[in-house]
Amino acid sequence: AETHYHQFVIQARPVKRLCRTHNTITVNGLFPGPTLEVRDGDTLVIKAINNARYNVTLHWHGVRQLRNPWADGPDHVTQCPIQPGRSYTYRFTIQNQEGTLWWHAHSRWLRATVYGALIIYPKLGSPYPFPMPKKEIPILLGEWWDRNPMDVLRLADFTGAAPNVSDAFTINGQPGDLYRCSSKETVRFPVEAGETILLRIINSALNQQLFFSVANHRLTVVGADAAYTKPFSTSVIMIAPGQTTNVLLKADQTPGRYYMAAHAYNSANAAFDNTTTTAILEYKSAPCNSKKGKASTTPVFPQLPGFNDTNTATAFTAQIKSPSKVNVPTVIDESLFFTVGLGLINCTNPNSPRCQGPNGTRFAASMNNVSFVPPRRNSLMQAYYQGQPGVFTTDFPPVPPVPFDYTGNVSRGLWTPVKATKLYKLKFGARVQIVLQDTSIVTTEDHPMHLHGYHFAVVGSGFGNFNPQTDPAKFNLYDPPIRNTIGTNPGGWVAIRFVADNPGIWLMHCHLDSHLNWGLAMAFLVENGVGRLQSVQPPPLDLPRC
Ligand code: C2O
Image (cartoon, rainbow, N blue to C red; front, side, top):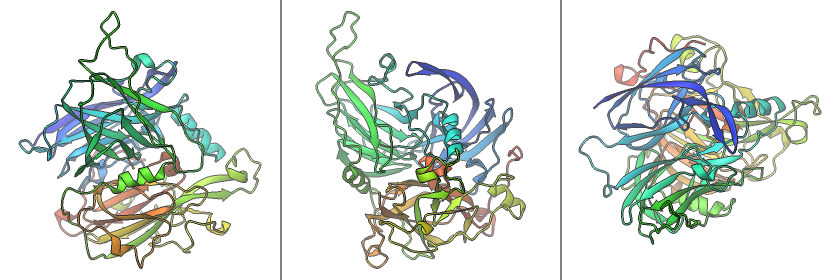
């Protein structure tokens, strides 16, 4: 195994998109940021130098960080942020994971521009479970705002209203042909007729689930998050923020030019960015008809599902399975039921400029009616490790305080979340099941829920209210997919299982950042076990302090 050393300088750089130049927070001046390539078993040592004017942290999305929460990154959860002018070195080893992951800033909305791919190849000498592709291409789907995303968020924080939706989606940082002033920079992927390429698709958008398709080409799904999947063929994929999907594409069409395109999958009845981002798959042998020998035929456009095509989205996700039998806990020590949804906080003066949410309220979001508030004076993990009291409590409720019909109208009393910093304590080694249920309060949504420090088996999902009598009988305990981010289904639920074998404090949250900002999060405290292999490593000496 190798150790890879990198320096990530976080700095503002002018970036021009949609005819305007912005001072954009980047890593090493790159947008998107650098791609990290490692093999399973390798160690990464990344010195993050903060030359920006914001506090920042970096998160290695999907890396398990066994016994090493110090490298996980969510601000005020596992570390205090790196202040401007300071640095922190993230040091971690990839342990039994292969596939596509990614990294992103995990403080405020900096991840809008601070993100990149993290590619984990198999150990030297071990092959993919599919024929070796000729090429591998990371496809980072993102969102772009005409304004500084940090200002968009700050305004929303002030008014209590929903933040502005993005002005463009992007593929590898570029909006593509359908947006103003963007066609010259449209990303092109050259292919040779007949070859097979592996697309490593990452949804790094802040707030939007996406459909993705390539004109005339079938896609064979072979991986999701950091795990292989049973191959299946599809013309379109749905991918939620945080998720990754590996697909094989065979260049088996008439040599020519084909668009790959992504647009929103939006189950919520709310404003969203309805634009489409494109890149071009370009056969090298495509007929040329311009003087410079550049292919200039208009690319073929793919058919994308309708924005609210929940059936296509859910059917796609449900089709993803592990290649063969996986280890899933069959006996459960902790059976948890978490509601996931939005809420509204009443204002004493509904006409206040700070109460611009629906009917003079402020937006909030919660799990089991607790809206997560990160501490200010310390990080949860540092407070826990130092035994500092008063930073959090461990009384996060295992079930909602009042059960109700999660798909219907509920009385306003149940709408108002309680703001608190509550953790749920798990014994080391506990076998855990969590049912995540969308509440349909304010909006009916497919919340993509991400758990830090773990991956989990997705054993079941459905629409409507979870039924504890009949639904568990239908769980797939044989070949469920192993993921780190999974949607609830709009107005529905999803059930996951894992063994709490990684001590530390681990955030679980909606990967739509507007919801995370409203408090759609909670954290697990997985207690230190006895012995070296069951307890958290000592913190690095340069761990930032608050
Ligand atoms: Cu991809 Cu908590 O993050």
